Length: 297
Image (tube, rainbow, N blue to C red):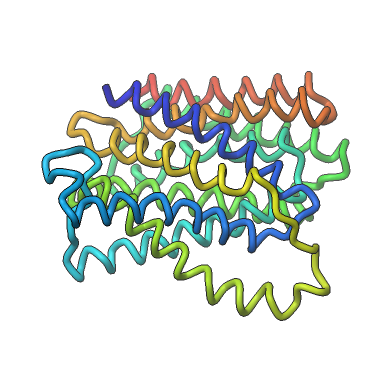
């Protein structure tokens, strides 16, 4: 069951990335990030209020229980990690083609596996080492494809923002493994969303509002609330799959990142991005490496 949930999560997260790209094209980054989290918070507020008033019974999957102060602080830490990752990836996505963005994003499970190797003292099998080497090789080859479009993987700050955001996302995945064995899935989803909105208010006030006249102007697009909606659905399915006792975080991380296939196809067909055949071959190489990581367990 957890594998089916992870596949469904990947489907929704693929469209989540597409809606982000549509919203961010020639648009201000931070207001979009804030408003999409507001949309998610409004939806989750309905679940919290329904749980408090008894409309959702305590034994229902959609019930949101109350949390202790310690659990709230654990979720604040998760929110800080995720928001840092999002800010990096949002700025990167705004300035990078989807067909560069998606394969960098797809390396996330590699870093998650390496994190599990260090933190949980796991040992990689020969097949996993082969998978990791394959990913690094095709990641390097992708840098050569990016240079053909004027993107140097060494000097382009948006490429490095994307890499940083991906690494922070892997840190978050490892942290999720701990959280979701201790805290209810709906509680994590709800309060994580609320804290995102609250923490983005000072970020918006300090970094965007005073400089808004000098930066890219903000324009409202209906893709913005869909970012929040599809993220909520994708994250709930992901959180629920991790919370199941027999689930494997390495496989879930792989399946979840397979959303890059949807994003890559959309970028190729809709945005008419360049060097599709070459980058598609490199993407397949990265995905094969990720499969080897999982099969080598």
